Each structure stands twice: as structure tokens, then as C-alpha cells.
Length: 347
Image (cartoon, rainbow, N blue to C red; front, side, top):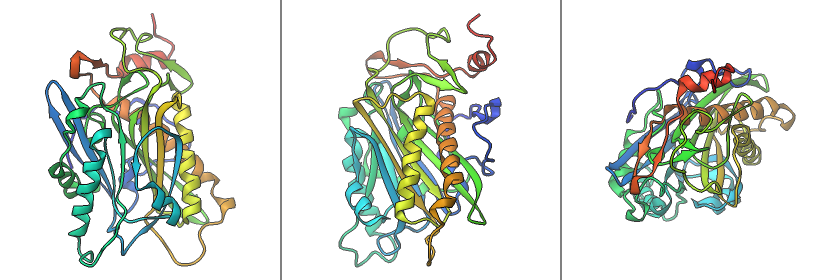
């Protein structure tokens, strides 16, 4: 898997969200069968973009997985939404990228899928591609993400630790006044008498005012005041939630709804120009009845916690980036954040 320079994650700093324990990696890849791959496209100073692939097992048109989707604010492009919502099934990996590259990425995903074993007779499939607008830092009109990048992300997808921050689809994104990018986290919980894992991966690019453990944090409050960032009313967040709990599509839609709700904990504004989407899938479609709805509350809470921590990880992993037109987004400095949480900053 493509790697980015390792920076401290939320838990490394003692920032613990909720009471549920994370999986071994505290990542979406803690869910059995889920792999993640990135391809980063960076041509300094004007291009900071890429593509991220979330690949759940051998998902394909002949082996779909139950899935649900929820739109918080629909100012965005989530290709494949209508069929996914209609049928409640996912037929392809989920790809994330830059807004104007989303359509090329979808076409490349179709080509890659048609080459998979068992797809020789496939005449229809539903590619699922989400996007965020990285145009503040990157030359979005160049549409720099190409077929070779899509194939690289898919072919590199693996289990294990997930690179976060300025990598893949998060290379040029920013959130809550800071440089952000890709972030991930996971939680384990008991559900219907069995141990289950839920993992979240975010492409964070949304507006609002950052809140960490109830404290408001802004670039200015940390002494990072400078040139303004993107307009506060713009931005988006794409969230992918995976679980090994036996859920049906309706229940997964409920899970996706909580994932979007979780952004409010971090200070999301859900503005007019925001595209806030969550897709939830299960890797374990089993015959028989799904878990009873009355038993879902622990899983809902686990997803709320995982998404909140994933957003924090996306911020903490990112590095200060200067891009197109000299625009700069500052990294969230871990030392000053800890001072704020301890009441030591500003001095």
C-alpha cells in the first residue's frame, strides 16, 4: 500500500473517542476482507490529487454485497447512488477521487471490473465513485487522475495499516480550516451475541469549526492565522463504513445515516455547498434473518465514534500544503492541540 509520512494519530496523543475498543489497526481494514489502496498524483506546485480504493473482498456483479447510502447534503457527485439505493447492493469497490476526475475514474473502474474472473459475460454493472473538490490546492480542471492511477490504487489495495492524510483522494483536500485528507478508524462491539467490527474511512474536505473533545480549535486560536482558506460554505466529506455484522440494506442505510451525523461532532457546518455522503456495507452477507433492529444501538454508537476519530486522524496525519496559486492549508499541530485540550493554549 502506498504510504505517507507517519504522524501521530489521535490515540497516539491520548485523544480517545468513546468507550468501545478499536480493532488492532484502528482502521477500516480491521473488518475482515476489506482492503485499501491509494494512488497519489502530485505535480508541484499545481497538482495535488489522487484516488483511493476501498475493496471489500471479491465484490462483483455476480457477488454483490448488501449496502446502504445516506446523503446529508447532496451538493456532490456519488456515481452509482440510485441503483445502490434501489437494490441495496454494491457490485464494485468504492473509489474516491477529485470532483472533475470522478467520471474518468468510474470509466476506469468499469474496465478493471470487466477483466475480473467471472465477469466475462457481464453486460451491466454499477460503478460507485465518490468525490471531493480539491480545487483550492490543485488544478482541478486538468483532471489529472487517469486510468493508470485507478488501476494502481485497485491493484495495490491491501489489508494492514492504511496510509492517511495527504495521500490518494486526500492529497489536495482540507477540512475545518486545516489540511486534511484520508482518515480511518474502527471499533469492536458485541451485537446479537457475536463480536463485530465496524470501520470507517473518510475523505475529509468540509467546512465548519473544528471541535475536539468539546473544545473549539481554529487556525487563529493556534497562532496559525494567515491567508484565508476555502470559503466556509464549500466542501464535502465522503465516508465509507464497513462491518462484518450481518445486516440488511435497510439497516446499513441506518448505519450510513449515523456516519453523516458523526461529522457534527467534529464541527461540520453541513453548508449549502457541501456534499456529505456515507456508504455502509457488510462483508458478511449471510442467509437468514439479520440482527434485530433493537440490538443495533451499540453498532450505531461505534460508527459515530469511528467516524469522529477518522476525521481527527485525517487532520493529524496531514502536512501543511501549498498548491495552486500559492494557496496554503496548514497542518493541525499536535503539540498545540494538546495544549488547547489541557487548557494551556493560548498562553
